[in-house]
Structure formats: structure tokens, C-alpha cells
Image (tube, rainbow, N blue to C red; front, top):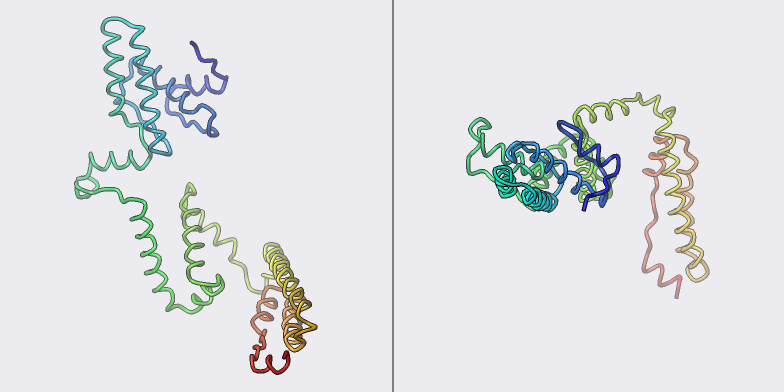
Length: 282
């Protein structure tokens, strides 16, 4: 039974030359590419001429199966040499370059390892190995940077080293996903190349400060609520929390990021005395 292709699907099937097909999951990409490739082979192309790149190995395997089935069905409708050619193409589709991008790159490198200067016995690392190597490289990099002034303050701003590492790798993945990673990074850095005296006038800094104050205000609301819960039974502890709230409130009054940061850095929170608590709260 003939398939009722949509106008966009028909255009993807019939457009000559190289093509990128981008569509949502379940929209029929595999069926469209299967038909497109089958028609090319029906018109005389060889499976060896193909290069089809997908995102997953499962998708590549599914596409090979569908193309093979489609070619076998077309061969059954032909006779003589043409039927034999299509049956041979169906059997040979398993050797076609239908794979993930890393699979295709590995194929090229294996064929031309001498030009690439690689050991012919090289292999692509498994995901767990790659993650371990990335983490090892990051740890070595951080160890070097800890010797530089200010780096430990940057790490501390994330709360702990593990959180900094996670955010760093997430940012790295995002940057490397850009069409021109280094160019994108340079442009991003240039946007933050602002003189210190001009920082308060920067709209981005103003919005960032607003966000920080909202988060601090929410934390103070929680602290204030807990203070009210214990005020009657533990007045000394409540008084300590009042002092903490007063110091934190000073940060909310600041008009600049530097003033906000300085106010928080200057906060000196009192410690609780268990001995005093026993005397006061008994």
C-alpha cells in the first residue's frame, strides 16, 4: 500500500544532493530516510555511496533493517538483472556507512590510520572511560589553578569543589556543542570585559543583584519563621537570630554587587553555647 507522504516529507525524499533531516521524535524521520535511500538505490546508486549519520546506534541499526526490507520488497517487483541488483543491495546495506558520527569517524580513522598517525589497533573509549578521563583532566587542571590568586575563592563561591566541577563540566559541554566553540567563548568573555567602575551601570549586573536579593530574602523569611517558633521557649537563641537577620538585612540595602558582597563577607554570626543554653532554657 502506498504511503501518503506530507508535502515536507515528500520534499525530504525527493530533494537531490546532501540533506539534513531535523524533526521531532515520532514524526517519521526514519521512514522518510528509508524511502529516500531506497529510491536512490532504485535509480542506480550503490550502498557503498551512502553516508547516513544518526544520533544513536539503535537508530542506525533500525534504519539499516528498514532499508534492507524496503529493497527486498522492491526487488520482488523486478525481474532479471535488476532484481538481482536490488537483492544484492539489500544484502549489502549492512556494510553501508549508516552510523553515528563517532562510528563514521572511527571508520575513516581505521581506513587511514597511517595518515592520522594512529596505532591501527586503536579503539574508541567507552562512556565510563571517557568520563573518568575528563574528571582526571579537570582535577589536574584545578590543581594547577589553585596556585593562582583568586581561584580558591571562585571554587568556594560554588559551595564545594564537587559542585564547581559539575558546573564546569556542564559549561564545557555547552560550549563544545556550539558551531564554533572557541569563537563563542571569546565573545562570551568579551561581554564581561567591563571596567569595575562601570559595573553598577551594567543591566546584567543589576538583574543579577536583584536575583541575589530575592534568594537572600527567601532564606531570611525561613530563618525569621524559625526564630518566631522558638522565641518564647528560647529567647537567647532568638536574640542571636535577630542579630543574624539584622546583618543579612544590611545586604538587602546595598545598591551594588560589590557592596552586597562586602556586606555578606562582613557578617559575623554568633555561635550557640550549649552550656548557656542549658542554663537559659532549662
